[in-house]
Image (cartoon, rainbow, N blue to C red; front, side, top):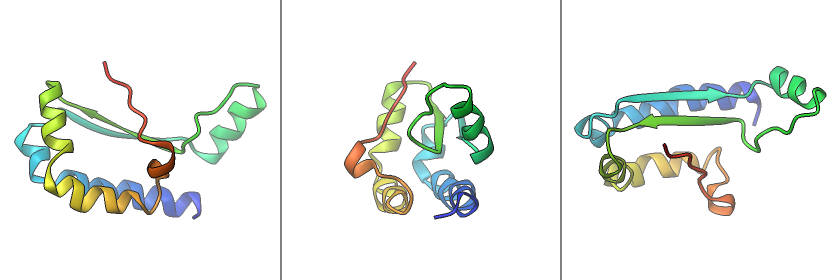
Length: 102
């Protein structure tokens, strides 16, 4: 898959599915941000001698409480729409889903 195709799909299809989930609004997600590593910036990082993260993008989903996250992530829509879509561009079945919680 090309970087352009990935970014377009992730930014439009996947994000639209995320925001369309009823639980996204029910738990009042505070913020949803997608961050990309462009090929140009990945090359600059490699040339600088630093190590890249092993994925091309990540999502930040801000919630008020852990319970809000669990309610969203365990919703039927999340399982029915987001995870099948993730099969198109994520290797989560092999490498798992990486999370940073704060």
